[in-house]
Length: 157
Ligand code: MG
Image (cartoon, rainbow, N blue to C red):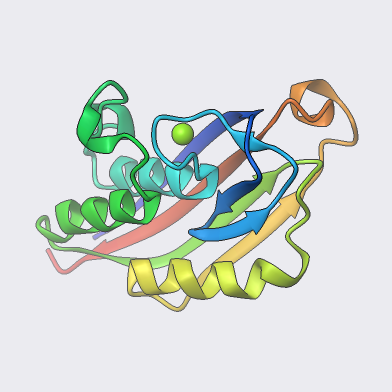
């Protein structure tokens, strides 16, 4: 059985000196406002994983008013999602992530992000894309950044 899922996430920029993207720390003049580490790529990925497995969304599993998740590394949230979908017999076939941001540009860290996400998913077929929004809208003004994720899951049942 195959199941597809998609996820979307957005975070506003705030005070800080780095952003987390795909669990990689990237130096940046602004941070993101978030309860966790604000990793939009991994939050979109969590929603795609949960959606594909029919398990609702990230907010149902990890409440953003729960002190246990304050400042948590989003890689831990992905790992927990993997545990929950694994319990249903699913494995990841591939994942395709898209970052929407004027800045930061992924450039040289794209390979690192792919490797980190692949390790989290236990799957080598991970693709990471990035696009600006051509200066349009909130993302284009540099108010924040957003991400889409699509994953395909397979189970033997
Ligand atoms: Mg988020």
